[in-house]
Image 1 (tube, rainbow, N blue to C red):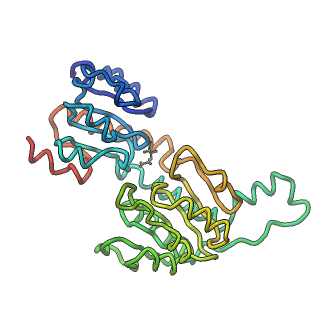
Image 2 (image 1 turned 90 degrees about the vertical axis):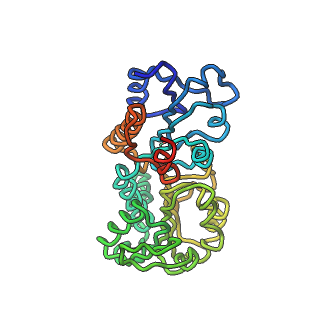
Image 3 (image 1 turned 180 degrees about the vertical axis):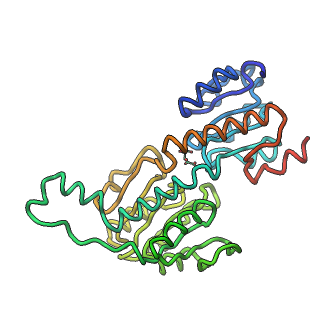
Length: 321
Ligand code: 8YV
């Protein structure tokens, strides 16, 4: 096994993952502030295990001169500086596929809840309000039009589930996806205009920052819902609050926020379903994510091909070895 200090941990991890990397590799936890890193310790680090919550941002990566790989627990890796990684020949891996079902299930749960208001109606019952009258009528989800922004693995899994509810599925991506029959809509504004619910399923990062802005929300309209299971950064959160307060959209279902774990108090409304970023949070999926994170780490340390490198660094192995 590699010398102590070779494998390091950035940010908190699933407890069983932390335990395994401590036992197998004597992994050390890096300080949250890159400036606090001891240069001798930093020079030992060849692999960092992290999650989307913390990642390996520019300053931390720059402080690790011998870094070879970042194994990210999570499919999203927008917190890791992949541009610097690609530049320096550092591999980055993530955990695609294993969490697709649970994240898509979460999207469906949020969609059903914003249309049918199960959470709000349960609060109504618990508050003892049923005795004085029934809950107001809600909206039908089956046979609605579901617009999906981004049609990767998770977007497609959401589309298949929505299709089982006899929904009309539309999607927006930069280029139409060849292998699907759902209708491609070239712009997010047009997608929003045509949809009863707009579901955000694009990766986070600079390319999608603020993609769902005031104009998209206005296009969604007073009968339209927004669901976000991707990254809070994709939605202009202030514009969303304004749209909700002005009645420009009907409601929202959110698993992700711009500044987690901070949730703006003005978002805590009866027409918004709020979840504390639990999309992938089942025992089964988190264990699969842990195992895939470890499989990438072990493959790298054994000089084997990586199971799930991210596209930005996938070609590097061939170039540098
Ligand atoms: C994780 C996620 O909970 O996979 C992702 O991109 O957002 C979630 O599955 C998160 O990355 C863990 O911190």
